[in-house]
Image 1 (tube, rainbow, N blue to C red):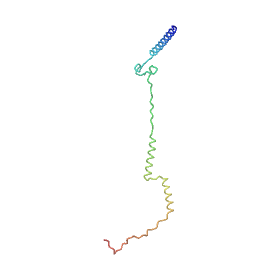
Image 2: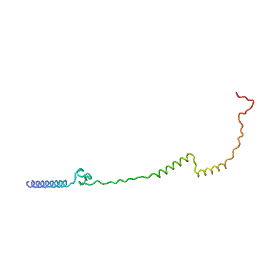
Image 3: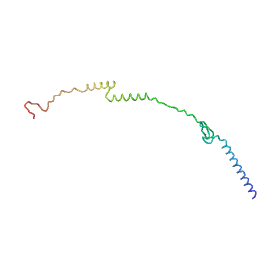
Image 4: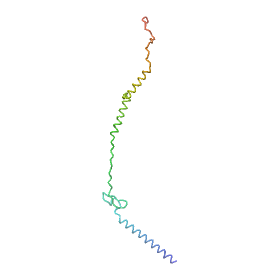
Length: 130
């Protein structure tokens, strides 16, 4: 059974050596970092995920300006023209159409007869009103 203890001591020793190597590697990695937080870098820099200082990117803002003048002119003219039409103004082509329709109507309708009706109450000179 002595050989079993020697193998377990060798395995334990090997495990301790592996742990020490990983710990030393981690210490070397931590020691090579340029920064841990933004405070470790200058005012114009930030600490990246690779633990090195990077300058802030310059973001150029693109300003888009819309020129809506002609759109407003077209809509305004449409409102004015529609208001004028609804108010009773007639456009030239509508006037020609209306005249053509009136001529057709006048041609079809007979002339009205004269009013020959007599009043219901006749005015006589010998009738007195109270």
